[in-house]
Length: 324
Ligand code: NAD
View 1 (cartoon, rainbow, N blue to C red):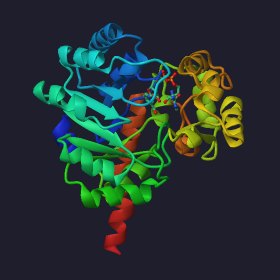
View 2: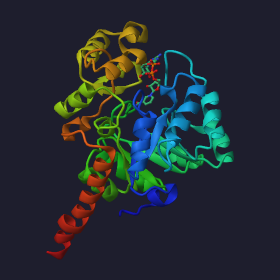
View 3: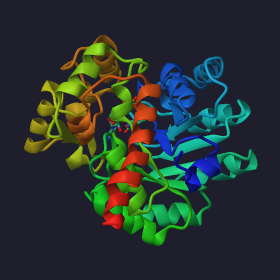
View 4: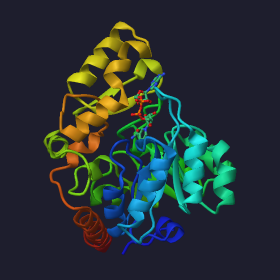
């Protein structure tokens, strides 16, 4: 067992998190992650309404008695989102762990704190991690440039970002972006983190409620199989390289407003792509870690494998360095 400040604070067996993933973070995956002894997050905005989120929380509870959380991502969206109503559902449902991401969580913190909810804020820069700590979040998740989804605009990879944040932040820290195996977990712990967050790796699991063809595409893809879209709109997102993301990059190169790419990038279109297995049907998030993903295990197999191999690396490979 690897015991860290993260496992202690959040009451989970292993220092592994499955963070918010739009159109992936449903009850099936989150409960499987929880039952494997890691911390899973339902993605609030994957549910069309706050009432639907309430039902998804109940559905997850019917599938696990272990702790799990809800992700609330605050980024530009095509349709306005009733964030306060989603927040209220989380509180009233008795959820005790929330992952915020995308923007300053300050407007939501007093209500979460009053409800005794622990907040992990996911951010992509040291200054935002420091700020999050100063406003009272319980932990930060620091997301390197390798990550799927939104890496911010600074382009600092985890190898620098994680120790740079560890130097400035005293609260528990989760390393995010580019993690998919035991080597990454041990490296993250060495860099000063208390655990890892994995997104793309959990997409390629038996329980992830996405089409088998998407899982197989992740396995077939390598570390170069991503595109950065929205660079010119200052809302950079790393997504799987496919016909649609190639087209978006080409349109942006010519100079574009969001309206010029809106029909291509709409979340609903991406949702159908991953639900129906239409690889080139829309935008779907995936990270550089695709280059390290070679199979589709169950969540239990994946988490157990990562933890056991991490212990082996620490005890044997690194331990022998000391002995010699
Ligand atoms: P959506 O259909 O509203 O928008 C599709 C994409 O366009 C998103 O990446 C969004 O950030 C971006 N976008 C929307 N309006 C924009 C604008 N005016 N300028 C620049 N970019 C714009 O998104 P959705 O699929 O319904 O998802 C809802 C929100 O949750 C999005 O903001 C999404 O990015 C976010 N989210 C992301 C992750 C992740 O990165 N893994 C996880 C959870 C949620």
